[in-house]
Amino acid sequence: MEKGCPLCNGIIDVCEICPYCGMKMEDGGSIDEYFDPYSPYVELKDEMGNVKKDRCLHLIYCPFCGNDKKVYINKVSLLGY
Ligand SMILES: [Zn+2]
Ligand SMILES: [Zn+2]
Image 1 (cartoon, rainbow, N blue to C red):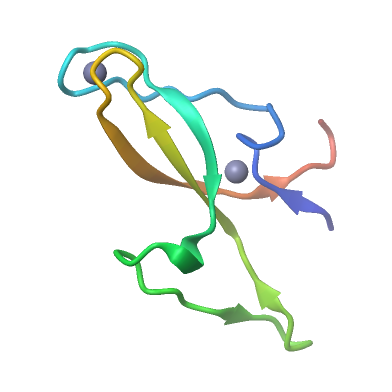
Image 2 (image 1 turned 120 degrees about the vertical axis):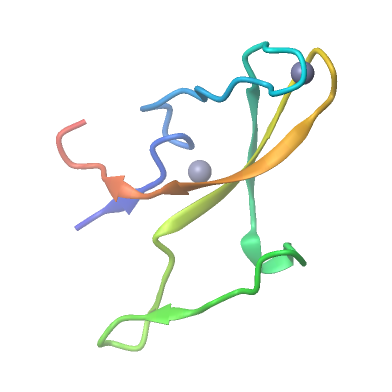
């Protein structure tokens, strides 16, 4: 079954509010969590030995004050959309 990130696929929108200025934050795109030094990369493998990536790491930012943070988006089945 095809799974994908709903934010990358435009199914959902960023709904985070900036804690500093209260404005709506925007999606800065997905980033590869392998290169994120703050979250140890954990490889999840299925029974076929394929690496499963069930989350998509996004950088979201506030266009008003420049605050940014990383959020994990759980991938969902894209069937039905
Ligand atoms: Zn994504
Ligand atoms: Zn802000």
